[in-house]
Length: 276
Image (cartoon, rainbow, N blue to C red):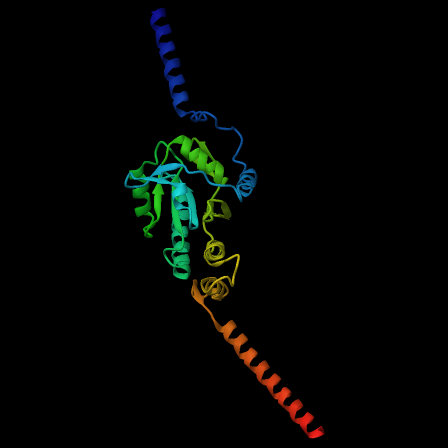
């Protein structure tokens, strides 16, 4: 009888221990720091990436085709980071970016720059899931590719672009960052936040697409400079528009000045003749 009681007691203790372990929080993943995500440090790392060259890392798009970051050189490239199991931040980032990209294409043209989104959960963010994520969150802008990669490729591009993320028991902590890379492959600007105004994305792209180092070297350079100054954001409409009124006013002012100079010159000439 005593043995039966001892056996029952051991069984009860084992059951209680199993229940406790099942209810206990999951252990931290390998390499995960116990401290909270340091957003100030993440911002410093992000800013330190400005001017850094992005490597030619290879990924797969939603159709399984290979895509390298270096393939996009020659035109500006917009890069965002998400993980597909994210419930709030990543869908919000994607939808907001889609609106900003459409605004930028309205102002600069659909062929002016490219957009990619990289999934940084290398286990879950397969090409199929990345494609489904894009469809679910209305990221159907033509040419926008959602990319999957292995741990080495994701870690490499994240380091080059200054993107910080950390696995947690509930998913990931990460900085909300959209990166603009120039045509040479260097990090040009960082845009922060799950939501941001379209000008924060469009203005740097304007500088890259329309800005020229030699504004009057050719007629094309001159046209780009005019477009750079005349493409203005209309907050009421939420869109960019071409406004040539400044140049029209300058032209009218120049004509008035020339007319006044001609009138004064003629009067001086006539006055001189009378004295002679």
